[in-house]
Image (tube, rainbow, N blue to C red; front, side):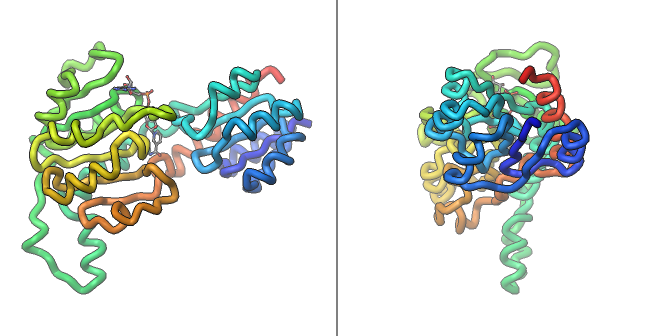
Length: 303
Ligand code: NAD
């Protein structure tokens, strides 16, 4: 029987479906030391972002010879040494299409939260404060949103923001995208200097320096708002705190962090940052779609 470990959990209906197809599905969470032993008798390892699959673990799995496939339930595969795994014959797959809508929605949610001080009101009102005068916000309507990265998620954010009356401009490594005439393709410097809101939707590759650091932040419009639902390392956290403190950036919203769970107290306690604990893809719908994509990947895999 083919044994699957879903180390960071899996949608219940996907688990039941896989079991009905004859697979053994273990949804216990194993710490890395325990996982090393489990992988000697497991053919498929499914993870989300919490489990880090590094070279050492891959070497043990390779030597044991049982592991045939690693699946990342989600998009970013930076928690897996995927190139190494592939080089030793263990393919790595992900489920890129399942979570775009959920991540786009949380991005828009964060934009409203920082434009209207919703996030900070939730903190100060619980302390008995009534900061009605201080919390004058701005509308999203009529503002320019700069999207860095215009792939699956960037496009879904654009669609929603456009419907809210925002002007959309985007920059991506792939250049201008065909069929998006309502939006402007601009180079990075123009995007940085002319956007009221900036949202990043690019992957992070291990060892890469932050795409948005101090230099890029200095180029931004005074009073800009920033949202990062991509990966913590894409926006330099130290530079962000400096720019928030000096008022260059009005407010930021972060779903992802350099270190997760978040430990950086400067970020955690900053009154100008709206925080969520990497829940961009954590919706019932996305997890259900991820489950279906995982079943397809396993069913189509030649063991
Ligand atoms: P995608 O591959 O469809 O699009 C990536 C985009 O980034 C493309 O437009 C590409 O051209 C651009 N790009 C890549 N490197 C770039 C660079 N150096 N400079 C400029 N543009 C660059 O990816 P996607 O599905 O839209 O996902 C984007 C990212 O969102 C993922 O890589 C992942 O890190 C993140 N994500 C976060 C969550 C969450 O829970 N918060 C969930 C899913 C995905």
